[in-house]
Image (cartoon, rainbow, N blue to C red; front, side, top):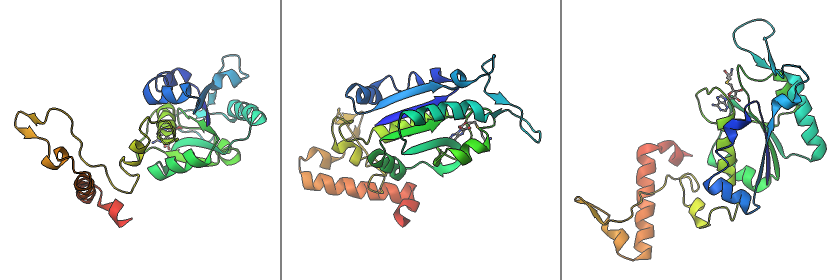
Length: 226
Ligand code: SAH
C-alpha cells in the first residue's frame, strides 16, 4: 500500500514514520510512504504557495496552482483510490474508515493544508474524500495525515507481529478494550484481578468481555446504541 502526502512542511513528517510499527511496516515492504514538498511545485521565485483570500478577511489561502501541478504529476504516474484532504469540516475519522481504506485502497494521496486552508477549487476538482481527526482546529494537516496513515497501516495484515492484537483493540468489535495488567501481581496492595492468574482461558475471555461491556456502558454508551 502506497501513500503520497503533499505538504508545505515535509520535515514535520520525518519522525512519525521513522520509528516503531510504521517503520517496521515500511521495512517489511508492506507500505511505502512518500512525502512531497509543495514548494517544489511553485513557479514563483520565492517558492510561495499562499496568497490573500478573495473577498478579504484574515489568514492566507493555499493556492491552486502548486497543488494542481503536484497532484497532476502523481496522477500521471499511477491511479489513486482516494485523494484525501485533511480538514476539520470533513468526516470524522473512526476505526471503520481506517479499516475500509486499509483493505480496499492500494494508493492513497493525502493533502495537508495550512493557514486558512486550501482553495476550494482543489477540493472540488481533485479531492475524493475529506477527513477530520476531531472537532478542534490544528495549525496544519501534517499531524492529522500522520494519524490517518498510522490508523490505516497498523491494520494491514502482517504489520503487527501478533495479528490478533489489532482485532482486540478498542472499537474493532464496537466495544472499548478491557483493562490490562502485567507484573508484579501485587503493587503496594493493588492486586491483579484473580481471574487473570487462573489460567482458565474461557473464564478469562468471559471476564474480558464483561469488562469491555462495563467500560463501554460507562464511557461510551453511544457505541452500544449503534
Ligand atoms: N479554516 C479552516 C481551518 C484551517 S486549519 C476551518 O476553519 O475549517 C489549517 C489546516 O490544518 C487545514 O487546512 C487542515 O489541513 C489542517 N487541520 C486542522 N485541523 C484539522 C482537523 N481537526 N482534522 C484534519 N485536519 C485539520
